[in-house]
Length: 233
Image (cartoon, rainbow, N blue to C red; front, side):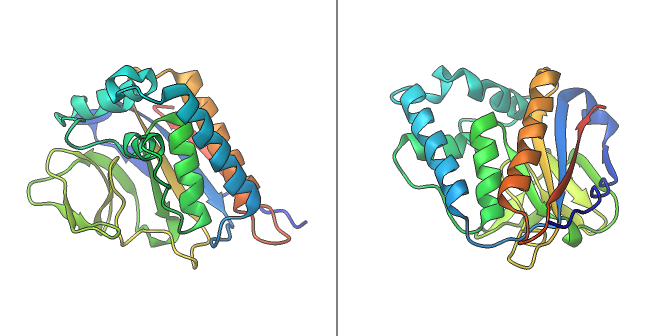
């Protein structure tokens, strides 16, 4: 199999006014082959879903300890997590209700696998659709982006990932502009956590995400190279 060099990191920064409220895992992967999930990924997702049902069936979100960090992150930004759920909590809710997870593309499935395993929201973006440096900041008055299969997502006051063209993600939704498609060859993932989140645990989450990309998204005959980092370093 032909190898490839580690993907270059994204020029990523966090606005000073929110730097003390957040901890992030940043993951890059390329080249990737985006399409239908293979049997190994299907099996890994099914096994995790069964484990989560066995562990948490019949419990309310407030009784599931692993959901607390995502909820704490939202509260730090003045967001009620019972009204606007972190994407990880919404996924777990589907699993516990016996509903199937959305299955469209293997890269999205890998992101959902990681989010369910970590119980943290994750943003998934096509790296080549991002323009210039990336900043995590609060959404400005009137800011929004067009969501994937959704209406405009309003961002004022909320944690917002933006590039030179404007906002493209937050812990609840990703934008259509930077969404992953079968043409995607380069991925950027952001794992969102509150500042108090254990650093060693987030390091393990980044390592798992890198491994999942390498296992499930490698192009035929090639290796999917990955890199990862934390904010703050």
